[in-house]
Image (cartoon, rainbow, N blue to C red; front, side):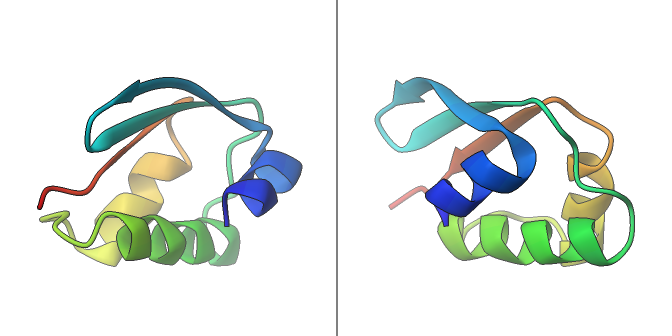
Length: 72
């Protein structure tokens, strides 16, 4: 999944803190299907994320920094 993010969104890992990863994104997913797919992937990595998939999709298509946090 991370390799796919690199190819599709130019997502580069810029920081790692224990259970959190931060990516800088060069190309945002377009609202709609692209953002929905990326949101599903992010929620699969961050299983404890307390947002609905549609909320994540909106955020991913609007921001250049993605934070993936998977609390134990």
